[in-house]
Length: 238
Image (cartoon, rainbow, N blue to C red; front, side, top):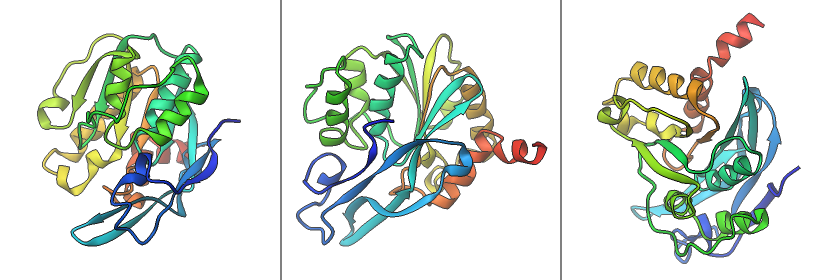
């Protein structure tokens, strides 16, 4: 179905570069991509992100699978580490699901606008996009390449109370990091975040969603994810 068939990264590249030399564990897992519903979003047993934080090695388990979720008339891609959004943006562009040069709306605890190691990727070649996404990009460096290669003309970052008050017009792709619901972001009312993101979901052309296991409890992240799509309500009505 896709190049995401489930594989390990054991070299110090991409997301595996963090604290690589100091870590006990030397490999991380990238889950398989499947078509499914939010019922299929579950926590796996593999380490997907590994870093040493304050002398403690954090071995974060992520999602069992990445999911393409057909929501109404649009594609929602759900995955753990945020750099995979870059691949799914290009994939969506190939499918004609949004207009090249539209806006990106990035809802996240972090800006994710670090410079990547390089910008050397052929966006017309999906194999090269896959290589670049997994071997060069990491969880903090995937937005600038999308701007550099004119996938998006601008990024609107919602990472504060001010951001949630912005009026967004025109066509956009919505990129959500569920760590916007982490404890560090509790100063923004939960109901405000949910209602605003629900509105953006309705209007977006494509949706990419990262569960970010290093930054938020995954069980809680999945619970919030289902609320954003009114999934529990839909299940009760079915």
